[in-house]
Length: 198
Length: 73
Image 1 (spheres, each protein chain N blue to C red):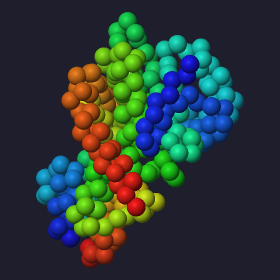
Image 2: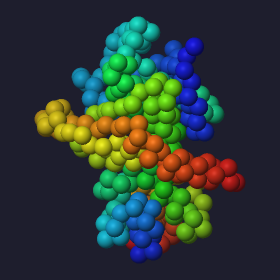
Image 3: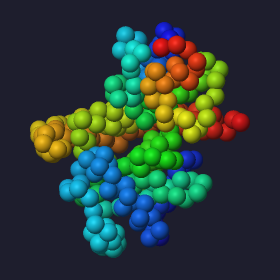
Image 4: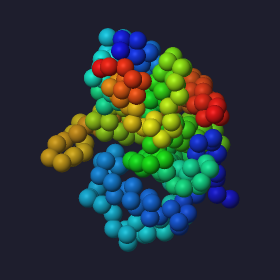
């Protein structure tokens, strides 16, 4: 049974065939490719199809479409990868489209909340970690609001153009998240109350 | 303008001196996705305004907010 994680603004659901073109467009966006540290200028449609065709066989990865809760349109992708049940940890990634509904406030915030709730709840993990380009200070900042801590720097780990860029390793323990989560939920509830007010 | 700067600084949880009329989501790390929600809610609450949902993504700088609120920069 595919996992479905439901929020007010978005839900995380299995990637459907109808999502592929939109996700390919996102993964071809230069800013997103830099953010997710994808190699090469862009994915071919064939590479894209092969990637999604392989997903059911990737036992150490769970990939979700971030979908608009009302229209079910795909707004982004969230995933857990390098899932290590024996070590109760996984890496995570998340990106949203650079325009349109995905830029509405709260989408990325709620998507990250849903993913972490799942990872540190039903999936039974104790630790989630990720990699962020050091040039994405606001992304590091947002993860820190969720309780992530900067655990290390991989110096000049990625090339962006002609420049070597550091990669920041962020890590989150279940207890860090438990402390940070209420403040995130409070902001999302205030946002929901705002949306409910005509 | 000063009032707006203070509201934004308080919403983002940063020292007031760090928020200037040139500040934006690009210059303040705290003005991340969550910070932007907090800024919007705080500005709406403080100034008694309601922004349209479709204009929220563009209100990501002090200047944009000030212009929207009708104050001079």
